[in-house]
Amino acid sequence: MIVEQSRAIIDEVGKALVGKRDVIEKALMAIYAGGHILLEDVPGTGKTTLALALSRALDLECKRVQFTPDTMPSDITGFSMYDRDAHAFRFTWGAANCNLLLGDEINRTSAKTQSALLEVMEELSVTVDGVTRKVPRPFVCIATENPVGSAGTQPLPDSQLDRFMVRLSIGYPTAEDQMEILKAKRYANPLDSVQAKVNRDDLLEVQNFLGNVNIADSVLAYIVALCERTRELELVELGISPRGIIALTRMSRACALIRERDFVTPEDVREVFKATCAHRLVLKPQARIESIDAETVLDQVMSEVAAPSMGRAGGRA
Image 1 (tube, rainbow, N blue to C red):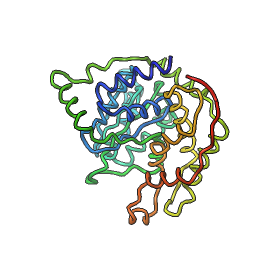
Image 2 (image 1 turned 60 degrees about the vertical axis):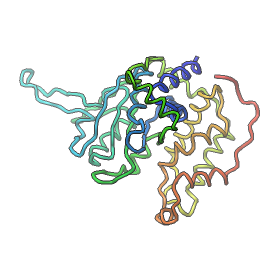
Image 3 (image 1 turned 90 degrees about the vertical axis):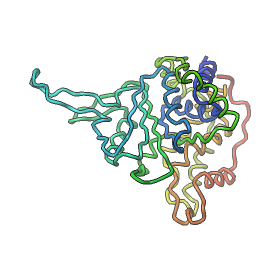
Image 4 (image 1 turned 90 degrees about the horizontal axis):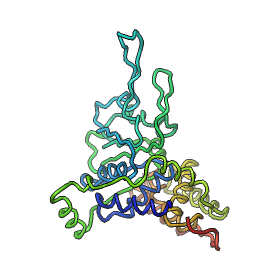
């Protein structure tokens, strides 16, 4: 049942984001794992389209915030305003009161506004005037940022990057895919054709089921060994945190689920390792001098840490 639903969701989102099935799959894995997504790419590659298509295919209430330097924290969390008729303060929700919060160009707002997302991403709640209020479930934050050009931007702090389960880059489509995009947009917006394939209760059921996906102790040890190795490398200032290990474990379970299995293999771990961990690494200046990026470091880690052999560990999801 879950496998068929996942295929239908991926195919539906693929109507709007052509030729990027791998990115769609990893985004869906992150949502199944209850995590948040950072889309980092140049303008015009489909970051916003992916987020909107996912919200429609999953039947999630979506709110969009276009981050600018004057965006306030209260625009995200909400605020209290005095009601003269009731002679009392009345709370008004901000954009976080939804199932899918799309933060466009998150690096173009102030650090104070960026930090307003920290509580809602981690605790699924907002606190205003000493009162904590829960946001609807399921809740996922999809943020976009442009890595090219630094004028008017505020880099995300490492503590906030660590709260995104994955960082994905869509990249340019092939020439054939661009032809298909042009034909699809000839008469209508492909987003208008995206239909809901599940509802919110279905998604919550999948998120709750994820813990039932088996993961052997040898695979858990492999995950820990990969992450510990990142802390030992000479060019790495800060390696993968315990939060990162938990995120990698959940993403590996979600990957196994989409690959039609109820158990995790080392290949599942390797498939999601870079998307889950590259943005969590802090490299030393020497790495930049030598033109070494985080993904290159993680490739080295995977080549150095031996994967365990797997026997028959389960069946189809």
